[in-house]
Image (cartoon, rainbow, N blue to C red):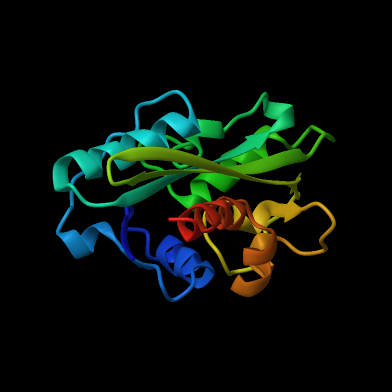
Length: 191
């Protein structure tokens, strides 16, 4: 089975393909010559995932899935949440996002946070949604060079290392995206 993953983020493609068995091959938006900027203007992570999947399905008529992920921090009332990617503004970067997050949390002892991934799949015109959550905490300084986004400051509950310190195999056993992808795989295996 071939599915289009509505992303051009190579890190996400690698992470997700590593979870899938060989019967499911994913391709990126580049593979279908889609370079459109899909405006993520919904108020929820779920809304943005669904919006991206519907956009690709409606325009290209291909089976596809899209994800959206957000970091939700208790002490910040769920921020950055749906704005995780652009948390530091229009001129965002992972570095700027992390610096803003750590600055906003410098005087709080409540470090609880969770990563949430929602995958929206459109298969033969039918929409299905899968959610994965990984609970953890925000550490005080960046650690590790692997992964992407907020991985250097997020340490999952019960683990000594941040996502950025873990190898991909370890991250894929506990991570939010991995949990959502596993639900996707279970669903596809019944098709």
